[in-house]
Image (cartoon, rainbow, N blue to C red):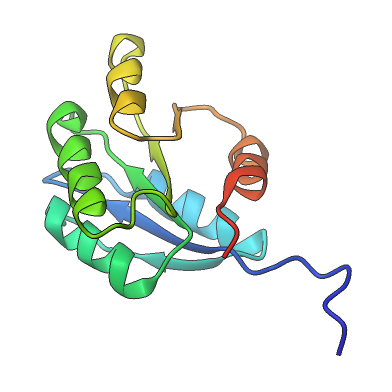
Length: 138
């Protein structure tokens, strides 16, 4: 059977880190990713950075999308990135952050290894195309 013309399946973990209980955006992006043909795993609420790292490694995902609205992004996201680095998963995992992230905090997240930050109102197709174009080849 030829795989020519078929897109590879991109495996994604959509994660909620910290005490942030607002998960509507995470559900919207998870559904959009699924509808785009991606394999999607949802972490559930209130996950510690270590939980997100473990799920990323154990599920062998291509993409980690972190939804955070609590304002703790400068503390929690670097912890996730350090954990991925420790497990050797940082290089082959595309990490995205979505939520209300002030413009002045974005550079710090990118320096920590985040590939992109998507704020409220970002068209879903823009995020999906970013994933398709940037997800690591396995």
